[in-house]
Image (tube, rainbow, N blue to C red):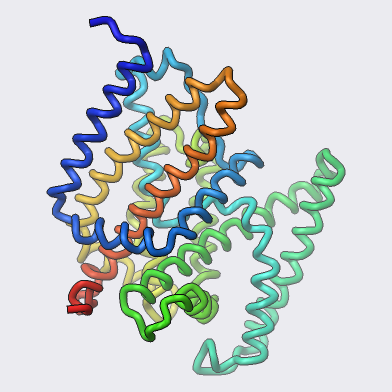
Length: 371
């Protein structure tokens, strides 16, 4: 039977989608998958926010998809390897960064200003003791540096060309620092957001996002240490020189080691968002959480890689089909971002629920709490 390219592609995607639906129907983690979907459905603004961040990052070149031709996509023996690597890297990166940190990191100076003012004005709201002079100096320094960096970004964009070499190096260095802080802050905020939904302290669900922000402010020192950890894998990614989906993995052994590194420390943002103490104590908590939840995480990881192989292939095929149609591309690009945002949010929320329910033995699930 001779079929057109789009017909064979549609049938293949339909078969994979049906198989995936049947797989999820009898999945051992279907309770967590269902609860994560309910969370996402009740707070659909989160998906729109992630989709908007993906579009914004792609517009400024921060997370550009790798372009593949139709000929490459029809040769499964050639494309399945790179797709599997990209899917594995995507899954490994999700616990550390749901959204591309650049250019949303431009908002960090404003958040640092709010945090500094609130800690100076209400010190006991965020800690048992008043912040010391060194902590106040650190907050003030990062606030000033943030606005200096923002000024450099605006100056570079207004001139339309690179600044002086040393100024450009300073700008890029500060961009990576504040991107690492953005990734750390958003992940800890999301952990606190899920925690407020999973274990509510009041009946006003509309305030969960603000309550999560207050908890993130209270853990600002852990977020700062987590940002230092983020600089490690961000620098590793930059050193590898990968582009593609914004994941930045090389095809060699270094790319797989980078993926393994992210997976080993995948519970670190959860520990920072839930456990008190120093960053090293939170690191120990993260390893215990990972050990307790290793079996369900492996099951989720296998499913997530399969889902993202399908999603990345469908996204690449849609882009290839509208490569010579600019008007159609204006429709396909937002739909791609929305689809990836839904999958990213759903699987990351499932991961967080698994960590909270299996990592903490006495942590009540929403189902048991309502019963």
